[in-house]
Length: 113
Image (cartoon, rainbow, N blue to C red; front, side, top):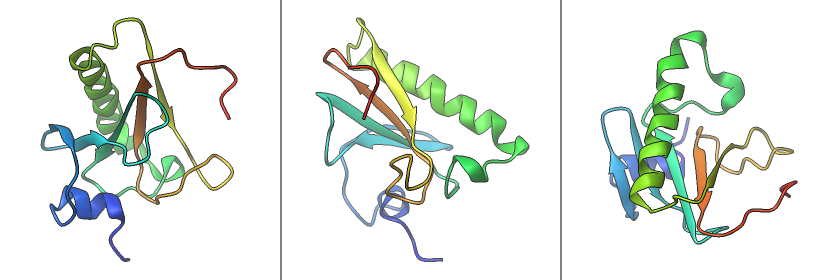
């Protein structure tokens, strides 16, 4: 399977504005932001989508959310933020590498999309 753009960022082949990095994930600013703060939190493990996670991935998925919480605090999103997983084409997923969107910095509408 060919590397996704996210895997190339994780591997350091493509530059990105990285805001967090640890042994399980990398978080970086989205190149096409949909809010003043739009950060992608991407596991180092190349899981194609939410439909592909296994029970063994539960600690990793929880870790992505704790990273989102910490990054949101670091970014000063003290009045609120949104986290989103897109899954599949109809869900808006455009890169086949699981990633959690962290959006904030403005009032976010509901329903989205």
